[in-house]
Amino acid sequence: MQNMRAPASLRKKTGDPRQDDLPAIGLFSTPAGIRTVGSPVRVKILSVLSTRNLTFEEIVRISGRAKSTVSVHLKGLEQDGIIGSKTDPEDERKKIFFLRSHSLGNLSGGITVDEGVDLAGQLISGNDPFGFYRYMFRTIRVSLLSEGINIDPVLHESGNRVGRTIAANLTDESLPVLLEKLSDFWQKHKLGTLEVESLAPLTLKAYDCFECGDLPQLGRPACAFDSGILEVVFSEHFKKEQQVDETACFAMGDDHCRFVITPR
Image (cartoon, rainbow, N blue to C red; front, side):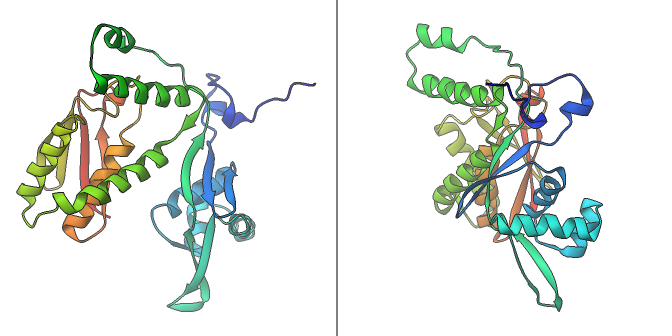
């Protein structure tokens, strides 16, 4: 059988910026099954739609493409069940587009992994069940990254689910009490050590991070699960949707992780 050349977004890093900067293939879960999105224009549109709904005019401006081109892409995304549309309540002649699917992650060029810490050696010489699960979590995630599979959206959604489960026990009328409970929860479950850096904006620092402390250097934030938990807990507390931006991370070479919580 003739060998087939893999799509650019699935190939290993080439060292050629023209190749390596190509967008990843997005994976989306729809009622009809998993759909892939590889078009740079569609990836860009979906990236913004994941944060807010957009009018057709906004999408045209963001994409930098002609209206006719954008119309074709939007029609294809709607047919695939990835996005939906509704009439603009302020102008019935216009449509508002929204994301109706869940992002599962993306496929891109795999990374070369520096194994770094000899966690396997620590497991053999120790008797720590938690250490084993930490090593297992790291191994699964690194293996996926090595193959070019990024599951950050799934980890973030998982964090949201955990956040909804624990929010009722952590939410308190007093922010200082909430922060103290959250710090105790982080320590009790060995997620790391959580400290308050600032209240305006609300900024938390995490040391000995369970999620990313053992990961190789990725050059980007890697605490999607933790961010998902914090997003829900503080959204429940403030009774307003919050967003969590990770501005420092062990996976970026920092000695801690930093989460900045602000209203969305």
